[in-house]
Image (cartoon, rainbow, N blue to C red; front, side):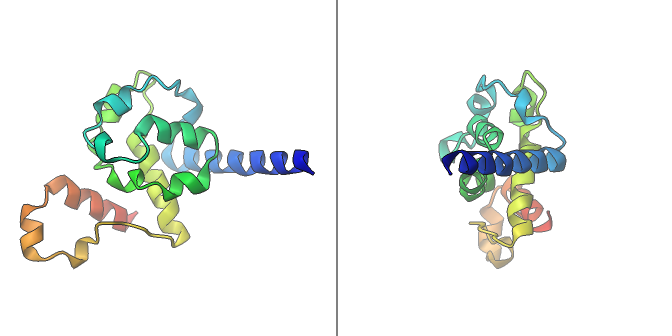
Amino acid sequence: METTLRITSARAGSSFVAGIEKISGQKLLACYQCGKCSAGCPMAAHMDVLPNQIIRMAQLGMRDQLLAAKSIWMCVSCLTCNSRCPKDIRIAEVIESLRLTVLRSGQRDDNLHIMELSPDACAVLPPIATISAMRKLTS
């Protein structure tokens, strides 16, 4: 029974990895966890899961934990992680594909509801936050 459960979980993880790779166009297993993406991320201090950990969780097929992470919504799509990756993995695209997976499943849990912001709030909000929020809505 336990062996069957492990095999089923491995298959489910494998299909999740394949789905994220297809949407993002990236090879997740190319990442060897150097951490340069996380070291350069301006939002890392606000994330519950760092960018390199996002990739590792995706590699391991940790679908539910990853899609529940606040980090996929904290990413401001600045592309610093992409420029720092020695394996040329476009991590921002992987994070975007995770957002898309959540949005397609109807489980949108976005902390920034851009359409509900007051004009005063929009005036002080950094432009990248607005752009990122709009990308989340249109994915």
